[in-house]
Image (cartoon, rainbow, N blue to C red; front, top):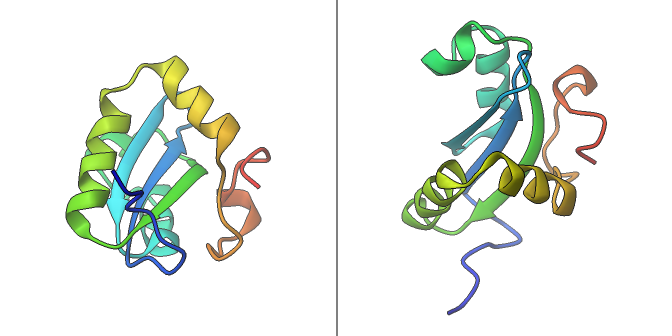
Length: 107
């Protein structure tokens, strides 16, 4: 099986840490905009009462279907699996966000 991730992606899966130390995984075509929406309380219902959020991990994909499959895989994983993912990955430099929205260990 080939890796669907790409160097110039149009679709992204991201992992946030909420203020209550829970994780949230989502899909977007614009990571910076979506993280700002979550942080402003206009994102997913789950994150609205759990701000501020920090971006921990981003993966890019060529297709929406590949990204959404990966989103499901991450969401279905345990907390320990998500912690391993964060430890192995991070946020690419191409994702331009203000420092307060990025976790210290994300870069």
